[in-house]
Image (tube, rainbow over all chains, first blue to last red; front, side, top):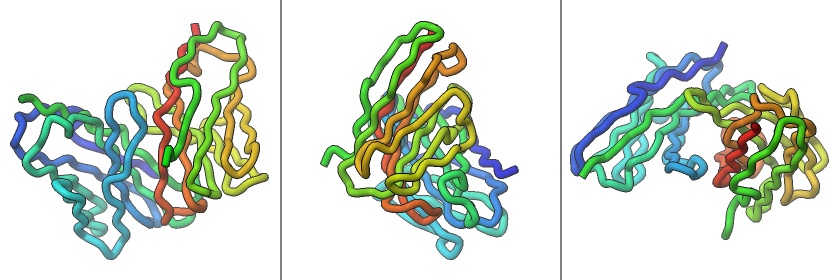
Length: 114
Length: 114
């Protein structure tokens, strides 16, 4: 069964600090991996999408990495801001799937403290 | 652009009541989706519509029906609500169905069934 595991479940850091969120997956055959940001009471918003051949992708202060061999991805947030407080969701797509080929992780809940 | 608009934002139902959740997108996307999000779980696909005139079951379709009214609108109906359907419901759309297309999500409908 396809699975996406994220760690940690929750994280609290001080404003201005960096942090890294982890995503491990067992989705086959792999097509792409996405990171979403979900603010409280809002829908997920796409941050990055990476295919098998991409190992790094940036979006402002967000940098995602992908190691397709070990089936791991990370999302690094640099110089955190209060507005970064949100849940971050890792989503992995399988090549054979259509809409039901997407597997969602449970998310990491990040709190930035002033 | 409004993107994906969901109504209502909040709803409380009594067990056995029926209701329809509305979703509309203004991006001329062909594919639309309904997900539910429960505490401690990743988003789960209820139903999707790859294109106007077609609908398919996702991972958790029991207790729900859908209608793709036209290219813009995709509604989700609960015929006889149950407490197990208490959840946050998200509608999403993409240019086409398939692993390589990005999804745009609405802001969600928070449904409580008592």
